[in-house]
Amino acid sequence: MIRLSLPQEPYWLDLAGGARVKVKPLTSADHVAAHGHARQDADAKNGIVRDVDGKCPDETDMIRLNADYFQSFAIHLALDGIVEWEGVGDKDGNLAEVTPENIKTLAMTPGINFATKYTEFMNAVKSEGNA
Image (cartoon, rainbow, N blue to C red; front, side):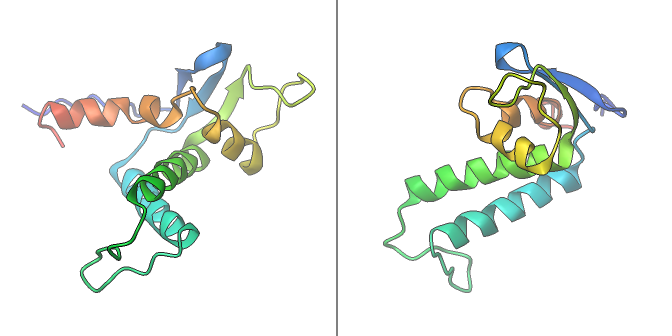
């Protein structure tokens, strides 16, 4: 049985340090787009030109490429998904505005696990065999 359990309205995610972000429901299209943008960004950052089969050159530093990919994936998910936040401050401790630059900074902050938390619902549905 397929359970229609994915959120339909924006909802809050609790992050480390008392921060919370309100996000739009993650769709399959959003998820795929974030993966595609992340691959393009990571390839460009690492000077990768893939062959016709999409494979990397043999000398590619795959650890670095994968790290850059995951960071870019988190950024693209955050840019597309975050609509509001609480408990996110600027360098002076004031509430930071929700801007693309601040969203990128938040997504790159170690330990907040934004991408993992944002994709939890989708991953749960996949693990149930519903995707």
